Image 1: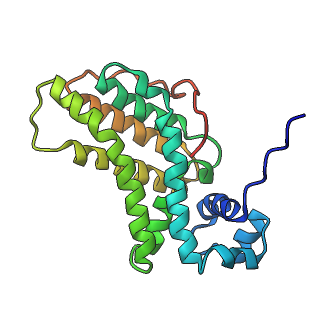
Image 2: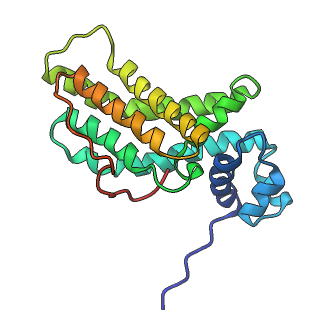
Length: 219
């Protein structure tokens, strides 16, 4: 007889709760009491693991990076032989993640940094590590696509990788403002066309329903 799966410890439950509650309510509006209730732990357990909500915010940004990093590392776009197809596959994968309600697909660190960039430098820096670290995972494919096409542009692979994140974060803001994913999907479609044109490829017709849903999780 197999053993039942061990229940995550209080710290892990608090971090998972932070991902859900902060994306739904925002960082400032989220209270320690709400995080404890969502995690099913006592306030004493909270302060055993975190000295303050801000300390949890830093840990939540790092937890977000670990969680989403595993999702993207196993994503199907890495299987393409052509590095440009891998880049475009990444964009398609981001569009495929636009499922559920707005809190289900928007970005934890993008949400937190907008509220804390001046007031809580430690959270701002953790969010920057997360966003910039994710952008860095695209750099090798962008450089390889540039090399295959003999491109020596004024822009860099790093700057294009960060630009892709600027578009995505802006798309999430628009989705929040308009209350749905459609405007974010349009922005991602424009990003795809831009990258195709940048690399000299004729833009493909974009399926309005998005690519087949092969997503193993949700951001």
